[in-house]
Image: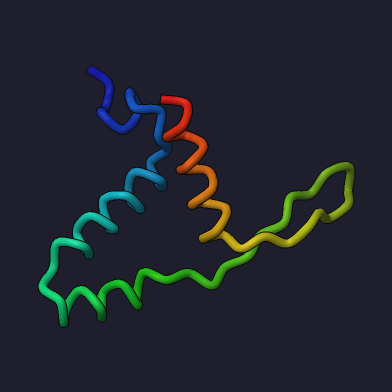
Length: 74
């Protein structure tokens, strides 16, 4: 039997991100604020094609966009 996150078309990392967000949102207000600050990302990435670096993108924004696109497909 396949894992539920695989059957839903998610990668393991995306599954963990969604799970962590759900847990953070379920906490009491004071603990939730502290946990949400720890969950913020300041990472950037760039795609390389033909030996040339592409445009830098914010990882959190790219992740949110990919999740929105995935939600539209379903």
